[in-house]
Image 1 (cartoon, one colour):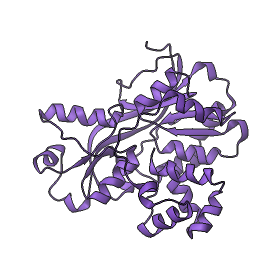
Image 2 (tube, rainbow, N blue to C red):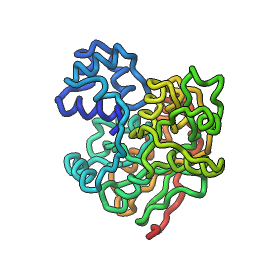
Image 3 (cartoon, helix red, strand yellow):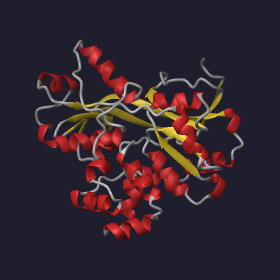
Image 4 (cartoon, rainbow, N blue to C red):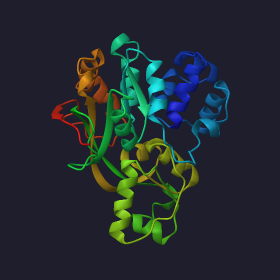
Length: 305
């Protein structure tokens, strides 16, 4: 579970609104919205105050995961069942959190975004735990959905190494990281970013040492910033955490919607949001996103078994 979702879920569990949490922590509502959306890394002081207001430690709220996340389809279904009427999407793109916030209060057209790697999202789609999955990968090599889907383009972005500023003058590549024994915060093996790292490792003919496992792009970047090392992440997450960025691969990001749910009222609302100026403006503020064609339909596929 990523830190940004920890904030949102702990707030909801306590029955607090974003305004009430902001007031209790002495921060702005805009900061709460940005942290929950994964587009802002709070200062140490703000992180401590948010944690106190939510009744937990800052480490519990914002610390990197040290275990490999593997949410079960049953666990995802349980979250779906308590959110009737929402269009439920699993994926790792922070833009989903922005979409959820912008569609909040939309009744049956509301969106519930669940944190998951590309592989976990596709597995949840296969098992009927979500209406749609977001996956990313090199153009033409995205993991295909195992059920008939309607495909929608979301974005293009760079996946690569976020490098702590103190190392930026001497570490400019994956090879430099390996030569200088710089720790790399990594991802679950089902994550498209981790697979990109493995391909780069293979191309160098080198062996990547084990490292801390983070639960998402933003947590990985924040962990690298806190630990003064490197992380496999996206350009947007790296920039947000104040890291230097070295690209390894260019990835396409797509939404795969189970065709059984094409008439869900949330689908039209999501499509309108993705093609609108407000969403593109908010996501564009993060940097690192190519939003040309965002929301455009790419056709249907029958599913790969």
